[in-house]
Image 1 (cartoon, one colour):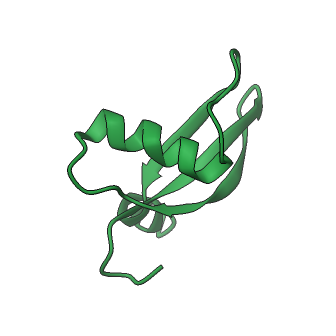
Image 2: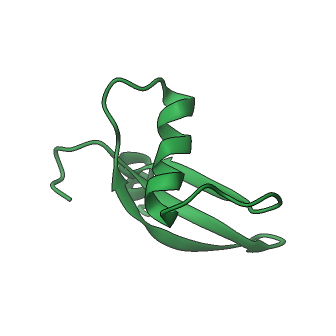
Length: 69
């Protein structure tokens, strides 16, 4: 994904405080923040989340900033 395009890093909760990276997806234009995050999760996993599954969508720019520390 080109650095100039906004996007999300999508994570899946494995239980407790353990998370795994599912993938990176582009942010869909025209969606408000919360809906854009929900859509990013659906795009990354290719389906609707099942009841009880936990995911997080972090802005790619924030992800890289957090890795600096």
